[in-house]
Structure formats: structure tokens, C-alpha cells
Length: 230
Image 1: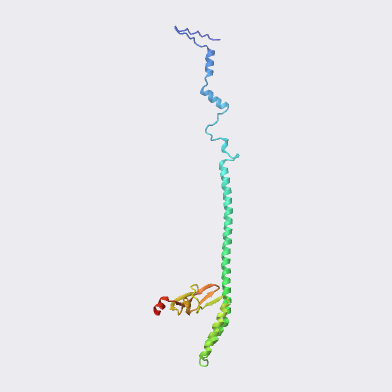
Image 2 (image 1 turned 60 degrees about the vertical axis):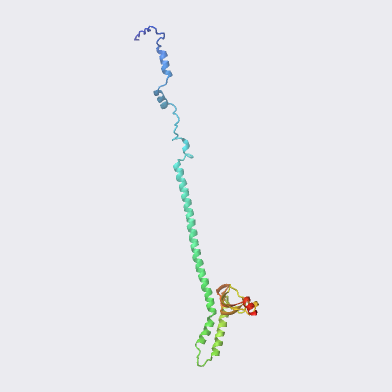
């Protein structure tokens, strides 16, 4: 049974009338409430997230960034291992080459010294024979001639291996292969800087100076001659 609600009497001076039920419902429907927004979010389309934390652009090709980084690290580690293996192989090859070169150089030096010693063995035999001569039955002339023979034989053998004797008597002084110990006056101007005497011969082996010749050099003294002439 419908209950009758009496109409509210208009107050004196009030020109507006109270709205009926239908107009009030339309007003209520025109203003959405927080509950309506919540219900719309639950059952309707969700609003886009402004923070972008779960945006689909963060993944590369459908793979998470951590997985991509791990894959790059694994690739780089593999490449480092390959390069390290190459380096160790090259280091081992170099060490083998260095040892082999040192061994071959030592063998070549020993072989060359062996040839040198072999060439002077006959000279050593000659020296041994002269060293054991009977002084009572041998004169000094024979000993001197024997020593000169051994010297020539020895120098000939060493010359075959590249040894040269520097004995610049009456030659122009050459500081490359000679060492001036002192000077003596030259008789003429043309003898200036010529070797007057050799105190000790020098030696050159295959172009390499082993010992310079120690010499006395002539020096022209023009002032002394001029004073003598006056």
C-alpha cells in the first residue's frame, strides 16, 4: 500500500518550489561520485599508468634487460678467453724462438772457435818443439829463426780467419786504427802527420778493431824552422 506524503507548504515569500523526485534523481546522476570512478576502474578499461614502470618498451625484443646484459657479458668473457689463449700461444712461441736462437748462436760461436783453434794447432806443435830444444846444442840464431817461422805461420793461420795486423810504419796517421803516444819533429813539411815509429802493432778482426796500433807521429814545426833560419 502506497503511503501518501503530504506536500510541503511553500513558505511565505519563497518564489521557488521544491523539485520533484525525478528532477532530483537526474541531478544525482549528473554528478559522478568517487564510488562510480572506483567501480568504473574495476569493471571498465584501466587508465594508463603515468609512471611507466611496467611499460612494454622496457624489454628489448621480448627479453628482459638483465638477460641482455648477461648475454653481452658472456660474449665478452668468451672473447677475452680467446684473446688470452692467443697471447699465451704467442708468448710460448717467442720463448721457444729466443731459446733456440741463443742455442744456435752459442753453437755457431763454439764452431767458429773450434775452427780457429784447429788452425793454430800446428803452430802450437812448433812452439812445443822449440821449447824443448837442448840449449847446449842449439845456437841462438837457430832459435831466432825458429821463432820467426812460428810467428809467420801463426799470423798466416789467423789471417785465414779474418785477422789483420795494423803496422803503419811511414804511413799517414789514421786515428781510426792508430793511437798517438807522442810526437817527434818532422824533417820536412811533407812528413807532417806521418808515423815515425810503431811501439805496438794493432789488430783488426773482420773489420772490427781489436786493438789500435800505438805509434809516434811526426809533426812539422814551422815556427821552429823559421827561428832557426833567422
